[in-house]
Amino acid sequence: MATTKIERLMNLVICLLSTEHFLTADKIRTLVAGYGESSSVEAFNRMFERDKNELRDLGIPLETGRHRGSEVDGYRINRSAYELPAIDLDRDESAAVTMAAALWDDPSMASVARTALLKLRAGGVELVADSDLTVGVRAATPRAMGSEAVVAVLLRAVENQLPVSFLHRPSPTAEPSTRRLEPWGVVTHRGRWYVVGHDLDRGETRTFRLSRILEPVETGTASFTRPDDVDVRALVAEAATFADSGGHGPARIWVADGRAAGVRRAAATVAPEDRDGRPGAVVTLMEWSAESLARQVVGLGEDAVALAPPVLVDAVVAGLRGALAGADA
Image 1 (tube, rainbow, N blue to C red):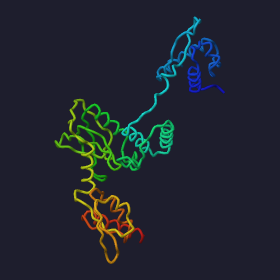
Image 2: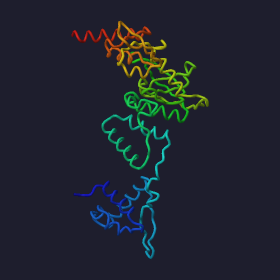
Image 3: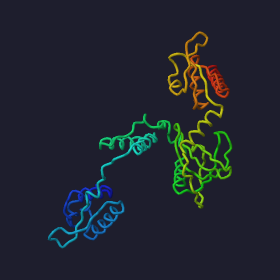
Image 4: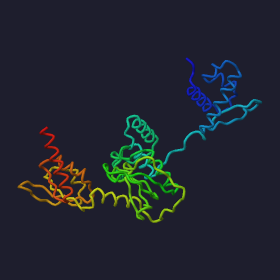
């Protein structure tokens, strides 16, 4: 079976890494599997020239020189220049690596990500655990991120400080409208991706969820200057919290004792209170999503009751009616 090009190049790299001396082309032809299949010296020379150029294009430090006493040029790879230095990540860099690996839940990408993390840990690199990250990486899937093309264009625009325009849906069922933005940053908050910046049409700071931005995103040519004192993470957290709660303030829910551990952990306050003779507590949440919280309350059945605000109560009632209709069907 003929040796493939990739196999031949790998054999060449291994051979040139394994020697401290400069190996002549004739010597390489005899040592590297694949070159012996060339029909003539001229064919080998053409093949070898192409392979050398390809290695250099890949950034492999191929050196040319002569071994002592030889009058013919030889080749080798400088191992110290070829090998990566020791990897030393600070906490932010470690968190970025862990988050990037967690984002790709596609089976093929997940396997690659796990292998990469395993190799880093095997090399002594200490990585931040998923549970230590300030964003919910397991929820920040590519679906929550939106289109990769949208993300790529927005990141380039942020880096180069260029304005963008795009179609945006304020809700999943709303008609899209054109928005023009000077993007200051792309960040995550509670598993969702957002771009924040100066809205050119409204003259205000605005935040947009990436999953609601439609392709394509157009980039302008006139650069802008990002404010020095802007905290994009704080802006996104404030805007996302307001949007999730519908601007209706804290959510209050009664939960039975021993139930709704997740809701209790997210609560700002927990006040013991009996209801219809059952021991429990009223929990208050400052950051919440009506859709998500209503699903949790409905799932708890008689062990949870939504008390306020009305938008949450209405969402729970609608969810219970839907569950009953499904049971009767």
